Length: 439
Image (cartoon, rainbow, N blue to C red; front, side):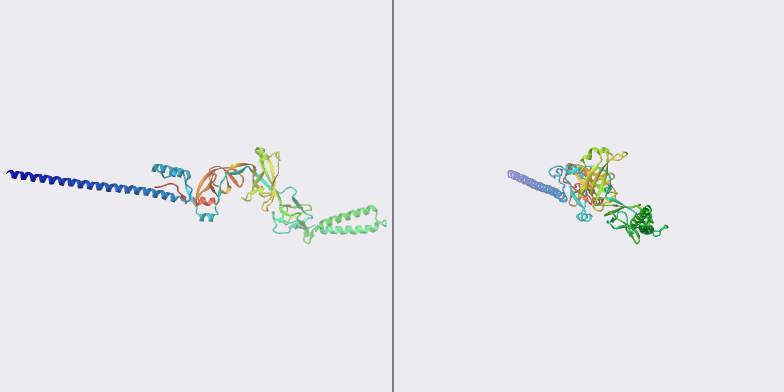
């Protein structure tokens, strides 16, 4: 019995030991499995973090590649360790500062004749803007007068004011054949021939004392008067009547008698003006009197064209400026320049005049052609890269007819469209390039 009890005790001990070992093995397996799962989760998290970092690097690279070729480098655009909110704020500030870009391809630029100028500070003259009048210098004009009475006809049926004429060439003729009183030249010729015959007869009779000396002198006087009248009327006569010649090379400034009009002897018919030198007379307000001594040159734009002429290119010079007003009723002071006529400047035309005074250094200016105007505000288009432009509002200063001073809105070193600005403006309607940043 005692042996049976010992055997049961040993059996229970073996069973307990087996159960304990099984539990420890299970706990060890569970710990191993849990450790493996944690390691797997840690590896997945590491891969996800690496994927996110790689995605962010791709996004940065994509953003940099998008702006390749354009000068958009700003310190606030650095993609370092700052937060996404800070980056969005900076991008918004950049977009607010620069607005939207305008796409304009090289093909469009070539078709529009686009021209761009690098804007740098340079000397710019002071300007007095006023009005003026182009005229021929005194003594360079001549009046053509009628040498006979009759009907005037011009040598060239298509002649008109402004047409070039040559010295000694016929401008017009005067015919009296159809006049009711007859041809004055024929009358003068008949009177001359009659006076000549009477004078020759008196010469033979005066020696024989048949004609007294007093009577002979009266006959001689009538003869010389008739001769002078006839020769004067016969000078320049053609088969069609008396010819009127141009007294100088120049152009026909004014036709005082229409074709077919009747003229008397000595009546003005036309005015001929020389064209190699002209004058520009500008009217300056009395408030600018103190600046008259500083005037060195001038630019002007005649009323019939948009072209601006420079005195410096026309061999021009300042002739005089009035110390007082030319007319007591006028509040303007005359300033007169003389210059070479380049062939297409019409005397008698009015002009916008830009009187230039002393130079001022380091002034930003653009050609007038670079400006566009919208409701009284002025803009230029700045090139930010090869095929992208930016609309920029500017504040204007002085104008010299060719260029205009920029007070605000531009900086030295920027490139501005000087030809084709209107085409860029049209392109801005549908080709804006936003400068915001998306992630």
